Amino acid sequence: MLLCVALLVTGCSTSVDDHKYHRPALNLFSYFDGEVKAWGMLQDRSGKQTRRFSVDILGTVKGNTLTLDEDFVFDDGEKQQRIWTITRHSDGHYSGTAGDVVGEATGKTAGNALNWQYTLRVPVGDTTYEIAFDDWMFLQDDVRMFNVATMSKWGFHVGTVTLFFEKQ
Image (cartoon, rainbow, N blue to C red; front, side):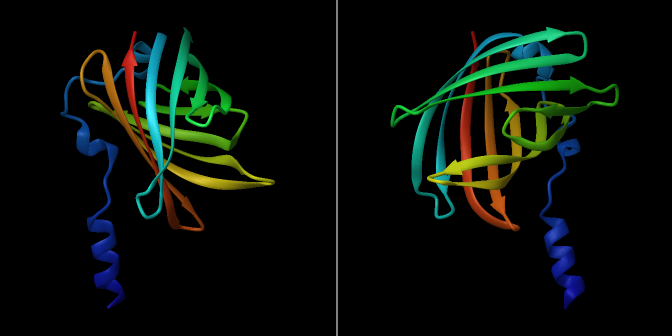
């Protein structure tokens, strides 16, 4: 019985390498070098939309480092800023840090996709929760990219973030 469950779970898993032949190929540094605008929403575990937001992103590339300065504006007027420092490694992997990221984010590109995983400190009222993100980006064309991130806590799905990027 346990073997059947294990096979079922692993049979549903997706690897970024499954996208290696999808085009156009995503060059993360080229895409985010310069100005990018994004729009998105958060949904709770039941799928109910809880917040909407827009993001102005300014990316700067220096060698194997990409810095993303992200300015968020939420539909309730709240503003947030996140500054990512992302390092490109020779094997197609990436690592990154930001002020509200616990430890280091890790990711890999293949074809038109990036799978990026990290834990984010998320303030809710007077409490801060550490939420795990399984973040998938898919390049549509030279200008547009989709992003879907599933959020979990203690292994349980707690929500989804959906974003649409447009290179300016």
